[in-house]
Image 1 (cartoon, rainbow, N blue to C red):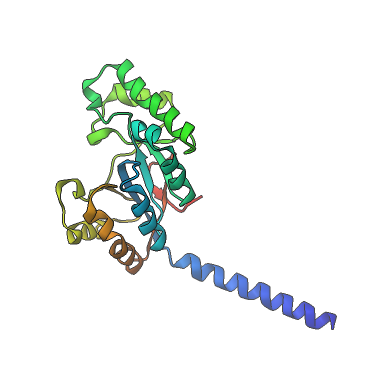
Image 2: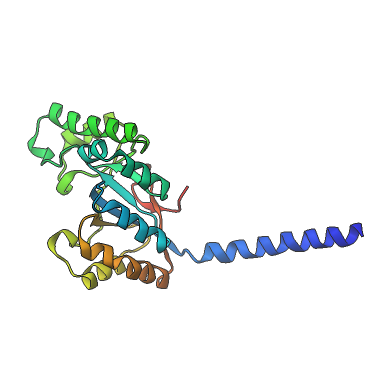
Length: 218
């Protein structure tokens, strides 16, 4: 009887071991899906539902003013398995501001996101992708890794659903795409984005604060 139980246990262990590499092999690489300009009551819930339903995780670059206004949506992002980054407080052209103004935009957003339950961000996306040495010094002060993007979906510029899907199809391992939470076409593209990535053996990963590249979720 003992031998039978032992054999069954060994068989179960062998099955578990053999299925693990197969599951891991499904991810031939990782990409960083990012959504800027949230959170909001109008768009965040539907975006999170679409991402969850399609097995995708993403980095949400939140504006501090909206994190302060909609803290429950910040918590919803975390609960849905998303990562929350800093996208400044009011989305200004930071390179036209003084260092103290930059500092205020960054620090207040760190505080707003943390107060809302989003943790202390480790990633920072400058509005419009505009940066300079002064801003990077401010980012470093708060331990933030600057994240721009490899592919711009152009969803902010009325890109079609097809164009947004095609932009995601251009992503390679470790690369990051810029999207926004408010365009209707972006929301509509989510199921096809998931299919496109799966067909190419890519998974939606986290963005490493160390390298700034998409990696397997930790």
